[in-house]
Length: 320
Ligand code: AVJ
Image 1: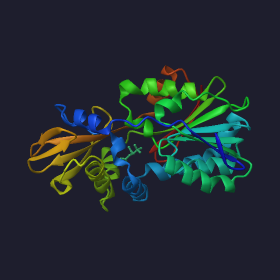
Image 2: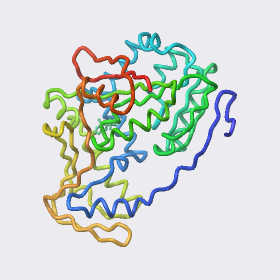
Image 3: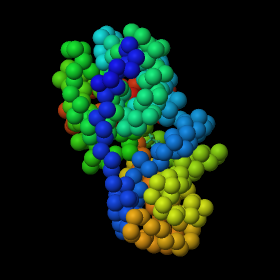
Image 4: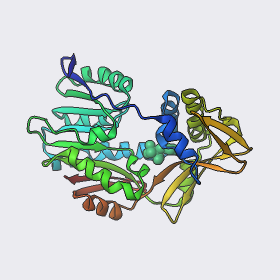
């Protein structure tokens, strides 16, 4: 690892470049065309997601932040001091600041695929917490989950906020949670956010904000792929669709093509007829009971969960 600051080291696991062209060509030529939600997030996409979190309709981010602030002491009481927080997909390391402020843990290990994002965030944050040892690790999820615990015998708390778990298909969730358990190690813990099932009108509003940030975020996947792979999408010919699928207990986001168009990915040509849809995201919603059961299914022992007064969002603490 490189020593960047007195309390900041940086380790580059050099996450393998995925073959985006191949991946996108395959997923777009399936009978039901899909795009992985990771394609939302270029620089503009991250800024748009930030804008979403500030809309009045999108409750998850601010509700989770209040839950963390309101219950930080109760959480600390179950955890004891002298922890190391590990956060896969830490992004700009914003959410952990509540925990750094309130817990003063021994260490913080953000794992993030975007090297630039990780370096910017940790260089800004580490000087503000001189007593916390920052170990920034540039890695993708699969590398992150097998990253060995080496925290000087201190228990590791894996922090996975934001209900990002809701992006995983039910069939893939178990394996992913087991990976988080492996990352936490034997004496470790998991603190994870899960968005809750609720009135579909409330959910639909959260993914169809009046300012149009979610629509722009969804469409940004096309702009991103045009820039990155020269696909030649006409983003103006697509409309944002987001709705709650009651049977599958998930918000679905799609991009609906309003006129015939043909795009190219690498050497493949793909026709998208008027009226067809590209499925860009699923965001599963949970009940506290079902989510606790899923944690148990992955080998965790649930300790506590916290829900806001309006039953919008949940945070779960479990022992690995
Ligand atoms: C980052 C996956 C938690 O599902 O609510 C927000 C992404 N998509 N608005 C979510 C998102 C549309 C978000 N997650």
